Image (cartoon, rainbow, N blue to C red; front, side, top):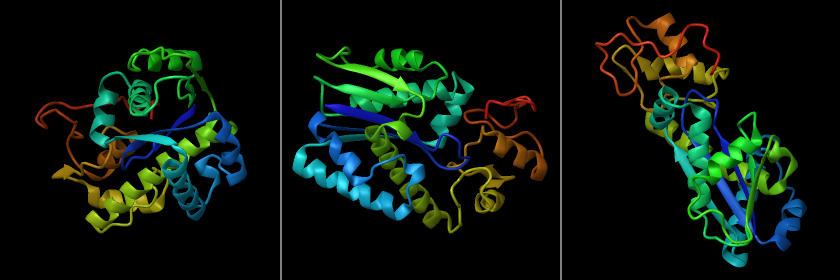
Length: 244
């Protein structure tokens, strides 16, 4: 079986990071090419909808598999206060792989977020249940979502789930949230209603530099920090921190 894994939502200030893994028999790989599967960023919303529906038709008829992990903003913030976003993705990727209904003759290909793809692979494999699986291997590559349809399919599944959660958040808040990315004008406008002096909405990534800059420009006192009392002196990052 061929398995691809990718994420959606690493950079936004709003909403979750979603990680998806998908798998299919080796002989079905050509079906992805014929269907026009590619990186989710290169597809319209309508086309992503169509390909996701098509994928789940194959799940029913051909035994394809998938697993989706949602990392909520609180988990992201706590990871940033601990060992960082790359380690969060290591854990999330391994959780997605562990969620697949396959344990033998599996070739896993991941889109690498680490500058060192082999290190990324090794860290994930250390967390895969009962790894190494029989006749199985894992590899990580930069831009794997662009170069390999199986990873492109995973990127579509992750993007679709993230979009659904953003749509649900829009319904709950009554706000136009846009994409959730810092440069989106709708997202910038929404922060006025989500980052308040009285508190920050749970679906905002409190530790993001975007949230910090908004707080410093529009609110008073220290930026709230997940898991810490607001009476403490709070500073997540230095002003010149470029990690986000």
